[in-house]
Image 1: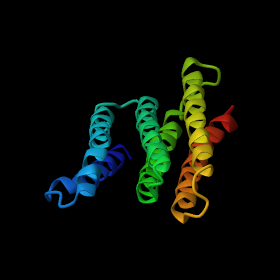
Image 2 (image 1 turned 90 degrees about the horizontal axis):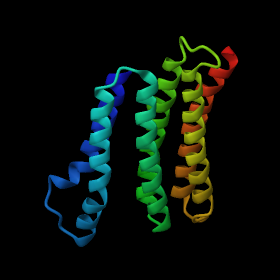
Image 3 (image 1 turned 60 degrees about the horizontal axis):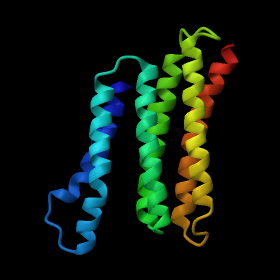
Image 4 (image 1 turned 180 degrees about the horizontal axis):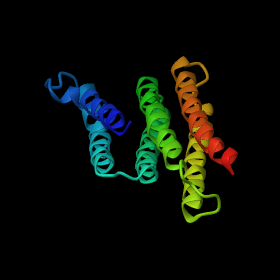
Length: 175
């Protein structure tokens, strides 16, 4: 699973960085390349942190940090009414939530003792990701009603959040 997530993030970096291979032909291409530079840097940094980490809870935390960054980028794209970018980022966010945060949360709970310090860390991580996603969902709902891309982006966020909730509910069921 760790390798799959690293490959997924690497694929995102390559996809996003593919624009760098061909010289920009329009000012819009240059702007998109510049817009993606911080995203690429953060994904590479996050991928390196994930590759070096064996603890699934810490991996979930690294994925959560990346998800928070991608959510912030989505809000900025939505503010600019950039439906294509918002929808693209929503797919990346969903993958991070499902295959990064939720998957690692489930793995981290295998030997979890209720009430332990680690149990509290899982709870804090869950609260943090929920808060960020609820704010993002609210932000996307207040966006353009006439653009299907924003509603599809909202659905992707909702689906990713639901997977994280399922991982946390399985934790609570074990208590």
